[in-house]
Amino acid sequence: MKKLYGVIGNPIAHSMSPDIHNAALKDLGLDGHYHAFKVEEDSLEDAVKGIRALGLQGINVTVPHKVSIMDHLDHIDESAKVLGAVNTVRREGDKLVGYNTDGEGFVKSLMRILDKPISELSFLMIGAGGAARAIFTTIVRDNPEKFDICNRTIEKAKQLTESAPSFRNVEVLSIKEAEERLEQYDVIIHTTSVGMYPNVEDIPLSLQRAESSAVVCDIVYNPIQTSLLKEAKQKGLKTLDGVGMFVEQAALSFRLWTGHEPDVEKMRSIVVGKLGGK
Ligand code: ATR
Image (cartoon, rainbow, N blue to C red; front, side, top):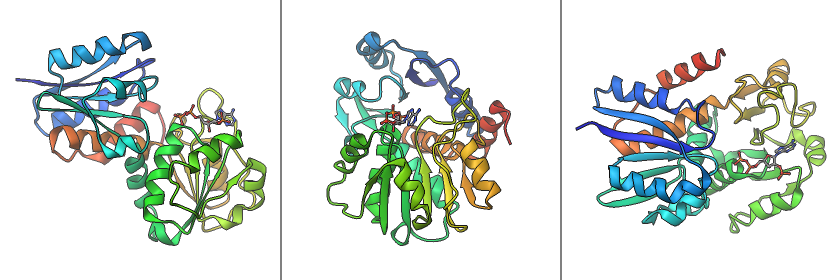
């Protein structure tokens, strides 16, 4: 019988997850279908009951349900516990188990372009929201030389450092302070919504002082070439766009559900095609 998968969120109409998951199911000859479900905040409990009753095999979870869904699941995997958020649910027998593949997805895409292990690198992250938490808690497990966080609201960056209390090589900075010492970092990761469509001219910080060997990553993927990445390219720096994290987190969910390896490059080209990018 056809196995069913999906994503729940709101808004969800423009989600590209159905495109990439359905293509991967088809390519691998798996009899399944992936659908986007719009679920309002006050309907989440009913939606999870529906997932159970209708026998869906796997679900991605996006805004605004990533945290609240935890109350409705049978078990939370360590990957989601440390983040306090779930982006993937897998049916395991009659139980629904919550996972989070966001942090690992980012690190997988980053590892494709790094030529040194994380333990030999120093990081700066801009932002302290949900995506930042996933990336910070995943990278500090590999004990980087340094991992500083700057954010518009400093207090939120301080709170984020408390999610990995055993990691000590971390400083919390204002955006201005980070700009002034940018030459200290090998990898600069932008995790806020600054520069996202339609505010495509906005830039989260100036890269003027970045080292020529630095790598600049933006998790925004609409547009694919954000103003930050354009500035990085103009300076001749290596860049990583947000499509990488999006497809890698999707591929990890797909593996969890099916046990099969999807073609990540094909997933990427579907997303790039839909965004009309390069
Ligand atoms: P997500 O789950 O996508 O990471 P989030 O949890 O709402 O989203 O976090 C949003 C992040 O973007 C925060 O770091 C936020 O900064 P504040 O903590 O100061 O709110 C940052 N952010 C959003 N809009 C911003 C803006 N216009 N300028 C600077 N930072 C912004």
